[in-house]
Length: 430
Ligand SMILES: *[C@@H]1O[C@H](CO)[C@@H](O)[C@H](O)[C@H]1NC(C)=O
Ligand SMILES: *[C@@H]1O[C@H](CO)[C@@H](O)[C@H](O)[C@H]1NC(C)=O
Ligand SMILES: *[C@@H]1O[C@H](CO)[C@@H](O)[C@H](O)[C@H]1NC(C)=O
Ligand SMILES: *[C@@H]1O[C@H](CO)[C@@H](O)[C@H](O)[C@H]1NC(C)=O
Ligand SMILES: *[C@@H]1O[C@H](CO)[C@@H](O)[C@H](O)[C@H]1NC(C)=O
Ligand SMILES: *[C@@H]1O[C@H](CO)[C@@H](O)[C@H](O)[C@H]1NC(C)=O
Ligand SMILES: *[C@@H]1O[C@H](CO)[C@@H](O)[C@H](O)[C@H]1NC(C)=O
Ligand SMILES: *[C@@H]1O[C@H](CO)[C@@H](O)[C@H](O)[C@H]1NC(C)=O
Ligand SMILES: *[C@@H]1O[C@H](CO)[C@@H](O)[C@H](O)[C@H]1NC(C)=O
Image 1 (cartoon, rainbow, N blue to C red):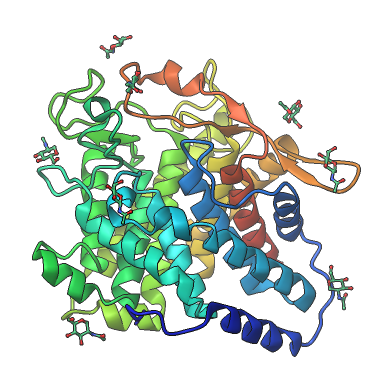
Image 2 (cartoon, protein in one colour):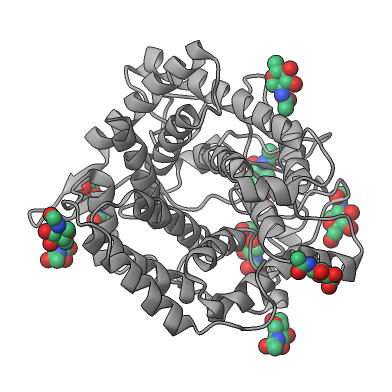
Protein backbone atom coordinates (compact mmCIF):
# COMPACT_ATOMS: atom_id res chain seq x y z
CA UNK A 1 0.00 0.00 0.00
CA UNK A 2 1.17 3.51 -0.69
CA UNK A 3 1.07 5.40 2.60
CA UNK A 4 -0.89 8.64 2.68
CA UNK A 5 1.79 10.39 4.71
CA UNK A 6 5.34 10.96 3.52
CA UNK A 7 7.52 8.46 5.30
CA UNK A 8 10.65 8.02 3.20
CA UNK A 9 13.42 10.30 2.16
CA UNK A 10 13.40 10.31 -1.63
CA UNK A 11 17.08 11.16 -1.89
CA UNK A 12 18.14 8.35 0.43
CA UNK A 13 16.03 5.92 -1.53
CA UNK A 14 17.75 6.94 -4.77
CA UNK A 15 21.19 6.66 -3.16
CA UNK A 16 20.38 3.16 -1.92
CA UNK A 17 19.10 2.16 -5.33
CA UNK A 18 22.30 3.27 -7.00
CA UNK A 19 24.42 1.36 -4.46
CA UNK A 20 22.50 -1.82 -5.14
CA UNK A 21 22.95 -1.41 -8.87
CA UNK A 22 26.68 -0.89 -8.50
CA UNK A 23 27.02 -4.46 -7.25
CA UNK A 24 25.36 -5.98 -10.32
CA UNK A 25 27.75 -7.88 -12.59
CA UNK A 26 28.65 -5.92 -15.70
CA UNK A 27 27.49 -7.15 -19.06
CA UNK A 28 28.36 -5.82 -22.46
CA UNK A 29 26.61 -2.75 -23.73
CA UNK A 30 23.22 -3.33 -25.33
CA UNK A 31 23.39 -2.01 -28.88
CA UNK A 32 20.05 -3.36 -30.04
CA UNK A 33 17.64 -1.07 -31.85
CA UNK A 34 15.47 -0.65 -28.74
CA UNK A 35 18.39 0.60 -26.66
CA UNK A 36 19.67 2.79 -29.48
CA UNK A 37 16.28 4.43 -30.08
CA UNK A 38 15.95 5.00 -26.34
CA UNK A 39 19.37 6.65 -26.17
CA UNK A 40 18.54 8.76 -29.24
CA UNK A 41 15.29 9.87 -27.60
CA UNK A 42 17.13 10.79 -24.41
CA UNK A 43 19.73 12.66 -26.47
CA UNK A 44 16.89 14.67 -28.02
CA UNK A 45 15.85 15.64 -24.47
CA UNK A 46 12.38 14.09 -24.87
CA UNK A 47 10.36 12.33 -22.19
CA UNK A 48 10.23 15.09 -19.60
CA UNK A 49 6.82 16.57 -18.68
CA UNK A 50 5.71 19.36 -21.01
CA UNK A 51 2.47 20.65 -22.38
CA UNK A 52 3.69 21.60 -25.84
CA UNK A 53 1.38 19.24 -27.73
CA UNK A 54 -2.21 18.14 -27.10
CA UNK A 55 -0.85 14.58 -26.99
CA UNK A 56 1.88 15.37 -24.44
CA UNK A 57 0.35 13.32 -21.62
CA UNK A 58 -0.12 10.07 -23.52
CA UNK A 59 3.31 10.57 -25.09
CA UNK A 60 4.88 10.71 -21.68
CA UNK A 61 2.91 7.66 -20.54
CA UNK A 62 4.06 5.45 -23.40
CA UNK A 63 7.62 6.77 -23.15
CA UNK A 64 7.72 5.83 -19.48
CA UNK A 65 6.39 2.36 -20.32
CA UNK A 66 9.11 1.95 -22.97
CA UNK A 67 11.79 3.15 -20.57
CA UNK A 68 10.60 0.81 -17.80
CA UNK A 69 10.56 -2.14 -20.20
CA UNK A 70 14.04 -1.36 -21.51
CA UNK A 71 15.37 -1.12 -17.96
CA UNK A 72 13.77 -4.46 -17.15
CA UNK A 73 15.80 -6.10 -19.93
CA UNK A 74 19.03 -4.17 -19.33
CA UNK A 75 22.02 -6.35 -18.55
CA UNK A 76 24.73 -3.67 -18.61
CA UNK A 77 24.69 -1.92 -15.24
CA UNK A 78 26.12 1.35 -16.58
CA UNK A 79 23.32 1.66 -19.09
CA UNK A 80 20.72 0.59 -16.55
CA UNK A 81 21.89 3.20 -14.07
CA UNK A 82 21.68 5.92 -16.71
CA UNK A 83 18.19 4.84 -17.75
CA UNK A 84 17.00 4.55 -14.14
CA UNK A 85 18.18 8.09 -13.53
CA UNK A 86 16.29 9.28 -16.59
CA UNK A 87 13.16 7.49 -15.40
CA UNK A 88 13.46 9.31 -12.08
CA UNK A 89 13.78 12.60 -13.97
CA UNK A 90 10.85 11.77 -16.21
CA UNK A 91 8.48 10.60 -13.45
CA UNK A 92 9.39 13.34 -10.98
CA UNK A 93 8.85 15.98 -13.69
CA UNK A 94 5.13 15.05 -13.52
CA UNK A 95 4.76 15.54 -9.76
CA UNK A 96 4.15 19.24 -9.63
CA UNK A 97 1.81 19.49 -12.65
CA UNK A 98 -0.32 16.48 -11.64
CA UNK A 99 -0.69 16.75 -7.84
CA UNK A 100 -4.06 18.57 -7.85
CA UNK A 101 -7.00 16.17 -8.37
CA UNK A 102 -9.42 18.86 -9.57
CA UNK A 103 -6.95 20.17 -12.11
CA UNK A 104 -6.13 16.58 -13.18
CA UNK A 105 -9.82 15.95 -13.92
CA UNK A 106 -9.74 18.75 -16.49
CA UNK A 107 -7.11 16.83 -18.50
CA UNK A 108 -7.76 13.92 -20.88
CA UNK A 109 -7.78 10.37 -19.47
CA UNK A 110 -4.26 10.14 -20.96
CA UNK A 111 -2.96 11.53 -17.66
CA UNK A 112 -3.61 8.13 -16.04
CA UNK A 113 -0.94 6.42 -18.15
CA UNK A 114 1.56 8.60 -16.27
CA UNK A 115 -0.14 7.51 -13.04
CA UNK A 116 0.58 3.87 -13.87
CA UNK A 117 4.24 4.67 -14.50
CA UNK A 118 4.45 6.66 -11.25
CA UNK A 119 3.10 3.68 -9.32
CA UNK A 120 5.61 1.31 -10.96
CA UNK A 121 8.39 3.74 -10.16
CA UNK A 122 7.24 4.19 -6.59
CA UNK A 123 7.17 0.44 -6.07
CA UNK A 124 10.73 0.01 -7.25
CA UNK A 125 12.36 3.17 -5.88
CA UNK A 126 10.14 4.18 -2.93
CA UNK A 127 10.52 7.83 -3.92
CA UNK A 128 7.95 9.30 -1.57
CA UNK A 129 7.75 12.58 -3.49
CA UNK A 130 5.68 10.68 -6.08
CA UNK A 131 2.86 9.98 -3.64
CA UNK A 132 0.88 13.25 -3.90
CA UNK A 133 0.66 12.92 -7.68
CA UNK A 134 -0.36 9.27 -7.44
CA UNK A 135 -3.10 10.17 -4.99
CA UNK A 136 -4.33 13.15 -6.97
CA UNK A 137 -4.52 11.08 -10.15
CA UNK A 138 -6.36 8.32 -8.31
CA UNK A 139 -8.82 10.79 -6.84
CA UNK A 140 -9.30 12.44 -10.22
CA UNK A 141 -10.87 9.25 -11.57
CA UNK A 142 -13.78 9.86 -9.19
CA UNK A 143 -14.22 13.34 -10.66
CA UNK A 144 -14.23 12.18 -14.29
CA UNK A 145 -17.50 12.92 -16.08
CA UNK A 146 -19.47 9.93 -17.31
CA UNK A 147 -22.10 9.22 -19.91
CA UNK A 148 -25.52 7.90 -18.95
CA UNK A 149 -24.23 4.37 -19.74
CA UNK A 150 -21.38 4.78 -17.22
CA UNK A 151 -18.72 5.31 -19.90
CA UNK A 152 -15.96 7.75 -18.97
CA UNK A 153 -15.68 10.91 -21.03
CA UNK A 154 -12.30 11.02 -22.68
CA UNK A 155 -11.78 14.73 -22.00
CA UNK A 156 -13.91 17.25 -20.14
CA UNK A 157 -12.07 20.10 -21.86
CA UNK A 158 -12.97 23.11 -19.70
CA UNK A 159 -12.20 25.58 -22.47
CA UNK A 160 -14.47 23.92 -25.02
CA UNK A 161 -17.11 21.76 -23.34
CA UNK A 162 -19.67 22.28 -26.11
CA UNK A 163 -17.48 20.31 -28.53
CA UNK A 164 -15.96 17.79 -26.10
CA UNK A 165 -18.85 16.66 -23.88
CA UNK A 166 -19.98 13.02 -23.77
CA UNK A 167 -17.27 11.72 -26.10
CA UNK A 168 -15.62 8.36 -25.33
CA UNK A 169 -12.50 7.37 -27.26
CA UNK A 170 -10.69 4.07 -27.64
CA UNK A 171 -7.50 6.04 -26.89
CA UNK A 172 -8.57 6.54 -23.27
CA UNK A 173 -8.35 2.82 -22.55
CA UNK A 174 -4.58 2.76 -22.91
CA UNK A 175 -4.49 4.91 -19.80
CA UNK A 176 -7.60 4.24 -17.77
CA UNK A 177 -7.98 0.44 -17.86
CA UNK A 178 -4.50 -0.46 -16.54
CA UNK A 179 -4.68 2.39 -14.04
CA UNK A 180 -7.97 1.07 -12.64
CA UNK A 181 -6.24 -2.25 -11.97
CA UNK A 182 -2.92 -1.02 -10.64
CA UNK A 183 -4.50 1.67 -8.46
CA UNK A 184 -6.75 -0.93 -6.84
CA UNK A 185 -3.71 -3.09 -6.12
CA UNK A 186 -1.50 -0.32 -4.82
CA UNK A 187 -3.23 2.60 -3.18
CA UNK A 188 -5.83 2.40 -0.48
CA UNK A 189 -8.74 3.15 -2.78
CA UNK A 190 -11.23 1.94 -0.16
CA UNK A 191 -10.86 5.27 1.58
CA UNK A 192 -11.46 7.27 -1.58
CA UNK A 193 -14.29 5.10 -2.75
CA UNK A 194 -16.11 5.17 0.60
CA UNK A 195 -15.77 8.93 0.67
CA UNK A 196 -17.82 9.21 -2.50
CA UNK A 197 -19.99 6.12 -2.22
CA UNK A 198 -20.25 5.63 -5.97
CA UNK A 199 -19.80 2.42 -7.94
CA UNK A 200 -16.16 1.41 -7.47
CA UNK A 201 -14.23 2.82 -10.45
CA UNK A 202 -11.13 0.75 -9.58
CA UNK A 203 -10.28 -2.90 -10.06
CA UNK A 204 -10.68 -5.44 -12.81
CA UNK A 205 -14.48 -5.23 -13.02
CA UNK A 206 -14.29 -1.47 -13.53
CA UNK A 207 -11.64 -1.91 -16.23
CA UNK A 208 -13.78 -4.50 -17.98
CA UNK A 209 -16.87 -2.28 -17.81
CA UNK A 210 -15.15 0.56 -19.69
CA UNK A 211 -13.52 -1.74 -22.23
CA UNK A 212 -16.81 -3.51 -22.86
CA UNK A 213 -18.80 -0.30 -23.38
CA UNK A 214 -16.43 0.87 -26.10
CA UNK A 215 -16.16 -2.60 -27.60
CA UNK A 216 -19.96 -2.96 -27.81
CA UNK A 217 -20.53 0.43 -29.44
CA UNK A 218 -17.47 0.71 -31.69
CA UNK A 219 -17.24 -2.84 -33.07
CA UNK A 220 -17.67 -3.21 -36.83
CA UNK A 221 -18.68 -6.41 -38.64
CA UNK A 222 -14.95 -6.87 -39.41
CA UNK A 223 -14.25 -7.04 -35.67
CA UNK A 224 -12.28 -3.76 -35.86
CA UNK A 225 -13.32 -0.81 -33.69
CA UNK A 226 -14.03 2.75 -34.80
CA UNK A 227 -12.35 5.66 -32.98
CA UNK A 228 -15.08 6.29 -30.39
CA UNK A 229 -18.63 7.50 -29.86
CA UNK A 230 -20.69 10.52 -28.91
CA UNK A 231 -23.16 9.37 -26.24
CA UNK A 232 -25.21 12.53 -26.71
CA UNK A 233 -25.42 12.07 -30.51
CA UNK A 234 -24.72 15.78 -30.93
CA UNK A 235 -21.95 15.70 -33.53
CA UNK A 236 -23.16 15.31 -37.07
CA UNK A 237 -20.89 12.29 -37.66
CA UNK A 238 -22.40 10.22 -34.85
CA UNK A 239 -24.45 7.15 -35.64
CA UNK A 240 -28.08 8.12 -34.95
CA UNK A 241 -28.64 5.10 -32.72
CA UNK A 242 -25.31 4.26 -31.07
CA UNK A 243 -23.37 7.52 -31.46
CA UNK A 244 -20.44 5.61 -32.99
CA UNK A 245 -17.94 7.54 -35.10
CA UNK A 246 -17.50 6.43 -38.72
CA UNK A 247 -13.80 5.53 -39.18
CA UNK A 248 -11.37 2.88 -37.88
CA UNK A 249 -8.30 4.97 -37.01
CA UNK A 250 -5.08 2.98 -36.71
CA UNK A 251 -3.65 4.59 -33.63
CA UNK A 252 -6.84 4.65 -31.57
CA UNK A 253 -7.33 0.94 -32.21
CA UNK A 254 -3.66 0.35 -31.35
CA UNK A 255 -4.03 2.31 -28.08
CA UNK A 256 -7.04 0.20 -27.15
CA UNK A 257 -5.26 -3.08 -27.89
CA UNK A 258 -2.19 -1.91 -25.97
CA UNK A 259 -4.38 -0.91 -23.01
CA UNK A 260 -6.12 -4.29 -22.98
CA UNK A 261 -2.74 -6.08 -23.15
CA UNK A 262 -1.29 -3.91 -20.36
CA UNK A 263 -4.36 -4.66 -18.23
CA UNK A 264 -4.01 -8.40 -18.77
CA UNK A 265 -0.29 -8.32 -18.01
CA UNK A 266 -0.99 -6.51 -14.74
CA UNK A 267 -3.75 -8.91 -13.79
CA UNK A 268 -1.30 -11.74 -14.17
CA UNK A 269 1.08 -10.29 -11.65
CA UNK A 270 0.36 -12.03 -8.40
CA UNK A 271 -0.13 -8.98 -6.21
CA UNK A 272 -2.64 -7.36 -8.54
CA UNK A 273 -4.44 -10.67 -8.82
CA UNK A 274 -4.84 -10.90 -5.04
CA UNK A 275 -5.84 -7.29 -4.54
CA UNK A 276 -8.37 -7.28 -7.36
CA UNK A 277 -10.15 -10.48 -6.41
CA UNK A 278 -13.13 -9.27 -4.45
CA UNK A 279 -14.94 -12.58 -4.61
CA UNK A 280 -14.40 -14.47 -7.83
CA UNK A 281 -15.52 -13.01 -11.10
CA UNK A 282 -14.83 -13.70 -14.73
CA UNK A 283 -13.59 -10.20 -15.62
CA UNK A 284 -10.12 -11.37 -16.56
CA UNK A 285 -11.47 -14.04 -18.91
CA UNK A 286 -13.76 -11.51 -20.58
CA UNK A 287 -10.97 -9.00 -21.01
CA UNK A 288 -8.95 -11.85 -22.52
CA UNK A 289 -11.79 -12.59 -24.92
CA UNK A 290 -11.90 -8.95 -26.06
CA UNK A 291 -8.15 -9.14 -26.64
CA UNK A 292 -8.38 -12.34 -28.68
CA UNK A 293 -11.19 -11.00 -30.83
CA UNK A 294 -9.57 -7.66 -31.51
CA UNK A 295 -6.15 -9.04 -32.33
CA UNK A 296 -7.75 -11.62 -34.66
CA UNK A 297 -9.37 -8.78 -36.59
CA UNK A 298 -6.10 -6.82 -36.65
CA UNK A 299 -4.20 -9.84 -37.98
CA UNK A 300 -6.87 -10.50 -40.63
CA UNK A 301 -6.83 -6.91 -41.87
CA UNK A 302 -3.00 -6.94 -42.08
CA UNK A 303 -3.20 -10.08 -44.19
CA UNK A 304 -5.75 -8.41 -46.47
CA UNK A 305 -3.45 -5.41 -46.75
CA UNK A 306 -0.57 -7.68 -47.74
CA UNK A 307 -2.72 -9.23 -50.47
CA UNK A 308 -3.90 -5.87 -51.80
CA UNK A 309 -0.75 -3.79 -51.49
CA UNK A 310 2.14 -6.27 -51.29
CA UNK A 311 3.24 -5.18 -47.84
CA UNK A 312 2.34 -5.54 -44.21
CA UNK A 313 1.58 -2.42 -42.18
CA UNK A 314 -1.09 -0.70 -40.12
CA UNK A 315 -2.82 1.86 -42.30
CA UNK A 316 -4.02 5.22 -41.00
CA UNK A 317 -7.57 4.16 -41.97
CA UNK A 318 -7.12 0.52 -41.04
CA UNK A 319 -9.69 -1.18 -43.23
CA UNK A 320 -8.90 0.71 -46.47
CA UNK A 321 -5.31 -0.37 -47.21
CA UNK A 322 -3.87 1.14 -50.36
CA UNK A 323 -6.78 3.50 -51.01
CA UNK A 324 -6.33 7.05 -52.22
CA UNK A 325 -4.53 9.24 -49.69
CA UNK A 326 -4.21 6.46 -47.14
CA UNK A 327 -0.77 5.59 -45.72
CA UNK A 328 0.95 3.13 -43.41
CA UNK A 329 1.26 4.90 -40.07
CA UNK A 330 4.40 4.37 -37.99
CA UNK A 331 3.14 4.55 -34.40
CA UNK A 332 0.13 2.23 -34.84
CA UNK A 333 2.36 -0.18 -36.76
CA UNK A 334 4.92 -0.29 -33.92
CA UNK A 335 2.27 -0.60 -31.19
CA UNK A 336 0.65 -3.46 -33.06
CA UNK A 337 3.97 -5.29 -33.43
CA UNK A 338 4.49 -4.96 -29.68
CA UNK A 339 0.94 -6.05 -28.80
CA UNK A 340 1.08 -9.13 -31.01
CA UNK A 341 4.56 -10.33 -30.03
CA UNK A 342 3.95 -9.74 -26.34
CA UNK A 343 0.67 -11.63 -26.65
CA UNK A 344 2.57 -14.60 -28.01
CA UNK A 345 5.18 -14.40 -25.24
CA UNK A 346 2.60 -14.10 -22.45
CA UNK A 347 0.17 -16.58 -24.03
CA UNK A 348 -2.57 -13.98 -24.34
CA UNK A 349 -3.12 -15.63 -27.72
CA UNK A 350 -3.38 -19.40 -27.21
CA UNK A 351 -4.57 -20.85 -30.49
CA UNK A 352 -1.48 -22.25 -32.28
CA UNK A 353 -2.62 -21.22 -35.78
CA UNK A 354 -3.40 -17.69 -34.57
CA UNK A 355 -0.03 -17.47 -32.76
CA UNK A 356 1.74 -18.30 -35.96
CA UNK A 357 -0.26 -15.78 -38.02
CA UNK A 358 0.31 -13.14 -35.31
CA UNK A 359 4.06 -13.67 -35.45
CA UNK A 360 4.20 -13.53 -39.25
CA UNK A 361 2.11 -10.35 -39.34
CA UNK A 362 4.07 -8.68 -36.52
CA UNK A 363 7.45 -9.40 -38.09
CA UNK A 364 6.12 -8.32 -41.49
CA UNK A 365 4.90 -5.00 -40.05
CA UNK A 366 8.21 -4.54 -38.22
CA UNK A 367 10.11 -5.06 -41.49
CA UNK A 368 7.98 -2.36 -43.13
CA UNK A 369 8.71 0.00 -40.24
CA UNK A 370 12.46 -0.57 -40.54
CA UNK A 371 12.38 -0.15 -44.30
CA UNK A 372 10.12 2.89 -44.40
CA UNK A 373 10.45 4.98 -41.26
CA UNK A 374 13.74 4.33 -39.45
CA UNK A 375 16.82 6.34 -40.39
CA UNK A 376 20.29 6.52 -38.90
CA UNK A 377 22.31 9.75 -38.77
CA UNK A 378 26.06 9.65 -39.41
CA UNK A 379 26.67 9.95 -35.66
CA UNK A 380 24.51 6.87 -35.04
CA UNK A 381 21.38 8.65 -33.77
CA UNK A 382 18.17 6.86 -34.81
CA UNK A 383 15.03 8.61 -36.03
CA UNK A 384 11.52 7.46 -36.84
CA UNK A 385 9.32 9.31 -39.31
CA UNK A 386 5.64 8.78 -40.19
CA UNK A 387 3.75 9.24 -36.91
CA UNK A 388 0.34 10.79 -37.44
CA UNK A 389 -0.36 13.91 -35.43
CA UNK A 390 -3.46 14.09 -33.24
CA UNK A 391 -6.90 13.13 -34.54
CA UNK A 392 -9.88 14.27 -32.49
CA UNK A 393 -13.62 13.58 -32.44
CA UNK A 394 -14.39 17.07 -31.18
CA UNK A 395 -14.79 18.57 -34.64
CA UNK A 396 -17.48 17.94 -37.22
CA UNK A 397 -15.81 16.75 -40.42
CA UNK A 398 -14.75 13.36 -39.06
CA UNK A 399 -14.51 11.27 -42.22
CA UNK A 400 -12.01 9.34 -44.34
CA UNK A 401 -10.51 12.57 -45.71
CA UNK A 402 -10.01 13.96 -42.20
CA UNK A 403 -7.91 11.01 -41.08
CA UNK A 404 -5.80 10.68 -44.24
CA UNK A 405 -5.06 14.41 -44.24
CA UNK A 406 -3.55 14.42 -40.72
CA UNK A 407 0.09 15.45 -41.04
CA UNK A 408 2.88 13.14 -39.85
CA UNK A 409 5.79 14.04 -37.62
CA UNK A 410 9.37 12.86 -37.21
CA UNK A 411 10.61 11.59 -33.86
CA UNK A 412 7.21 11.89 -32.23
CA UNK A 413 7.57 10.38 -28.77
CA UNK A 414 4.52 8.21 -29.43
CA UNK A 415 6.16 6.63 -32.47
CA UNK A 416 9.69 6.29 -31.08
CA UNK A 417 8.44 4.86 -27.76
CA UNK A 418 6.26 2.35 -29.61
CA UNK A 419 9.28 1.47 -31.75
CA UNK A 420 11.31 0.78 -28.58
CA UNK A 421 8.57 -1.53 -27.27
CA UNK A 422 8.28 -3.33 -30.61
CA UNK A 423 12.06 -3.75 -30.91
CA UNK A 424 12.33 -5.15 -27.38
CA UNK A 425 9.85 -7.88 -28.31
CA UNK A 426 11.69 -8.66 -31.55
CA UNK A 427 14.96 -8.86 -29.57
CA UNK A 428 13.30 -11.14 -27.01
CA UNK A 429 12.53 -13.59 -29.84
CA UNK A 430 16.24 -13.94 -30.67
C1 LIG B 1 28.42 -1.21 -20.46
O1 LIG B 1 27.97 0.00 -21.07
C2 LIG B 1 28.86 1.08 -20.86
C3 LIG B 1 28.17 2.37 -21.28
O2 LIG B 1 27.74 2.33 -22.58
C4 LIG B 1 30.15 0.79 -21.60
O3 LIG B 1 31.05 1.87 -21.42
C5 LIG B 1 30.75 -0.48 -21.01
O4 LIG B 1 31.88 -0.85 -21.74
C6 LIG B 1 29.75 -1.63 -21.06
N1 LIG B 1 30.28 -2.75 -20.31
C7 LIG B 1 30.81 -3.81 -20.92
C8 LIG B 1 31.32 -4.90 -20.01
O5 LIG B 1 30.83 -3.91 -22.12
C1 LIG C 1 -6.50 22.82 -7.71
O1 LIG C 1 -6.97 23.11 -9.01
C2 LIG C 1 -8.21 23.81 -9.00
C3 LIG C 1 -8.72 23.86 -10.44
O2 LIG C 1 -7.72 24.26 -11.31
C4 LIG C 1 -8.01 25.18 -8.39
O3 LIG C 1 -9.23 25.88 -8.37
C5 LIG C 1 -7.50 25.01 -6.97
O4 LIG C 1 -7.20 26.25 -6.41
C6 LIG C 1 -6.25 24.12 -6.96
N1 LIG C 1 -5.91 23.81 -5.57
C7 LIG C 1 -4.72 24.07 -5.08
C8 LIG C 1 -4.50 23.66 -3.66
O5 LIG C 1 -3.84 24.58 -5.75
C1 LIG D 1 -23.51 13.36 -20.81
O1 LIG D 1 -22.68 13.50 -19.66
C2 LIG D 1 -23.35 13.95 -18.51
C3 LIG D 1 -22.34 14.08 -17.39
O2 LIG D 1 -21.73 15.30 -17.45
C4 LIG D 1 -24.43 12.97 -18.11
O3 LIG D 1 -25.14 13.48 -17.01
C5 LIG D 1 -25.37 12.75 -19.27
O4 LIG D 1 -26.28 11.71 -18.93
C6 LIG D 1 -24.56 12.31 -20.49
N1 LIG D 1 -25.47 12.14 -21.62
C7 LIG D 1 -25.55 10.97 -22.24
C8 LIG D 1 -26.54 10.92 -23.36
O5 LIG D 1 -24.88 10.01 -21.97
C1 LIG E 1 -7.61 1.51 3.96
O1 LIG E 1 -8.39 2.56 4.47
C2 LIG E 1 -9.45 2.10 5.33
C3 LIG E 1 -10.34 3.30 5.68
O2 LIG E 1 -9.57 4.40 6.06
C4 LIG E 1 -8.85 1.44 6.55
O3 LIG E 1 -9.88 0.95 7.39
C5 LIG E 1 -7.99 0.27 6.09
O4 LIG E 1 -7.33 -0.32 7.20
C6 LIG E 1 -6.94 0.73 5.08
N1 LIG E 1 -6.26 -0.44 4.55
C7 LIG E 1 -4.95 -0.51 4.40
C8 LIG E 1 -4.41 -1.80 3.89
O5 LIG E 1 -4.20 0.41 4.69
C1 LIG F 1 -15.29 -12.95 -29.09
O1 LIG F 1 -15.72 -13.72 -30.20
C2 LIG F 1 -16.32 -14.95 -29.84
C3 LIG F 1 -16.55 -15.75 -31.11
O2 LIG F 1 -17.17 -14.96 -32.07
C4 LIG F 1 -17.60 -14.66 -29.07
O3 LIG F 1 -18.21 -15.85 -28.66
C5 LIG F 1 -17.24 -13.84 -27.83
O4 LIG F 1 -18.41 -13.46 -27.15
C6 LIG F 1 -16.48 -12.59 -28.23
N1 LIG F 1 -16.02 -11.91 -27.02
C7 LIG F 1 -16.52 -10.75 -26.61
C8 LIG F 1 -15.92 -10.15 -25.37
O5 LIG F 1 -17.41 -10.18 -27.20
C1 LIG G 1 23.57 13.51 -34.42
O1 LIG G 1 23.07 13.87 -35.68
C2 LIG G 1 21.73 14.37 -35.68
C3 LIG G 1 21.25 14.49 -37.11
O2 LIG G 1 22.19 15.17 -37.87
C4 LIG G 1 21.72 15.69 -34.91
O3 LIG G 1 20.42 16.22 -34.88
C5 LIG G 1 22.20 15.43 -33.50
O4 LIG G 1 22.30 16.65 -32.79
C6 LIG G 1 23.57 14.73 -33.49
N1 LIG G 1 23.84 14.31 -32.12
C7 LIG G 1 25.02 14.50 -31.55
C8 LIG G 1 25.15 13.99 -30.15
O5 LIG G 1 25.92 15.07 -32.12
C1 LIG H 1 -13.68 23.84 -29.91
O1 LIG H 1 -13.32 22.68 -30.63
C2 LIG H 1 -13.77 22.69 -31.99
C3 LIG H 1 -13.44 21.33 -32.57
O2 LIG H 1 -12.10 21.02 -32.47
C4 LIG H 1 -13.10 23.82 -32.75
O3 LIG H 1 -13.57 23.84 -34.07
C5 LIG H 1 -13.41 25.12 -32.04
O4 LIG H 1 -12.69 26.16 -32.66
C6 LIG H 1 -13.03 25.05 -30.59
N1 LIG H 1 -13.47 26.25 -29.90
C7 LIG H 1 -12.69 26.88 -29.03
C8 LIG H 1 -13.30 28.07 -28.37
O5 LIG H 1 -11.56 26.53 -28.79
C1 LIG I 1 -20.74 17.83 -40.64
O1 LIG I 1 -20.52 19.21 -40.65
C2 LIG I 1 -19.32 19.60 -41.32
C3 LIG I 1 -19.06 21.07 -41.10
O2 LIG I 1 -20.23 21.78 -41.03
C4 LIG I 1 -19.43 19.23 -42.80
O3 LIG I 1 -18.26 19.60 -43.48
C5 LIG I 1 -19.64 17.73 -42.91
O4 LIG I 1 -19.83 17.35 -44.24
C6 LIG I 1 -20.82 17.28 -42.07
N1 LIG I 1 -20.79 15.80 -42.03
C7 LIG I 1 -21.89 15.08 -42.13
C8 LIG I 1 -21.71 13.61 -42.07
O5 LIG I 1 -22.98 15.58 -42.24
C1 LIG J 1 11.44 13.61 -41.66
O1 LIG J 1 12.16 12.42 -41.94
C2 LIG J 1 12.16 12.10 -43.30
C3 LIG J 1 12.75 10.72 -43.45
O2 LIG J 1 13.95 10.64 -42.79
C4 LIG J 1 12.91 13.18 -44.08
O3 LIG J 1 12.90 12.89 -45.45
C5 LIG J 1 12.22 14.52 -43.83
O4 LIG J 1 12.97 15.56 -44.39
C6 LIG J 1 12.08 14.80 -42.35
N1 LIG J 1 11.25 15.97 -42.15
C7 LIG J 1 11.61 16.96 -41.38
C8 LIG J 1 10.65 18.09 -41.25
O5 LIG J 1 12.67 16.96 -40.77
